[in-house]
Length: 260
Image (cartoon, helix red, strand yellow):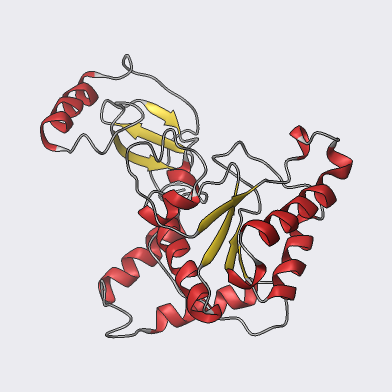
């Protein structure tokens, strides 16, 4: 917590949204593109821990966590200190033009945290969609193949390629086609809804996957298989135990890059 830490509780001083938030909502309509929608009209002024404070002084519990990027909480002292220290040294350079030690250090730490004793290298990107786009580029360049396989219920982003990889038309894809080609979709190992029950899901889902890829795509054409280890937007689906191992082994056998 910082020196002026807030009580970690919901505390309302006005109706929601309050007058200051309502005024900002009107300003947003006049100046921000309607292509950028918002989930509510509660405009945030500051945060502390798990609490956000809006411009009317209402304390709100942050269940969104910046879509899972603020898990250490707001105004965490170590994060604040690191940002201040870095900003006092240099704000930004393009690593590909003028490299710097911090990029290398982050990649070294990622290698230490990643399981396995194999060679590990990283590239850093600004968002999940950008990371997925570049992972597909790497897979296609490495294999010399074009096809990419994604799964039912998947969510991978809102750029053109990642929309093609995403399963849902609503609310993500409607009206934005045509999409990137050479994307193939296969059934997910979804234990809760598997027709013969969860105990058979991994083996049967994998057998179905392998058969469909063989007929619809051809193993020799597949550059990458892209899967969320736990699907989020699709319904927080945990694959049947063993399915990811079967998928990984299949990719290794056929020289396919597994992106997870």
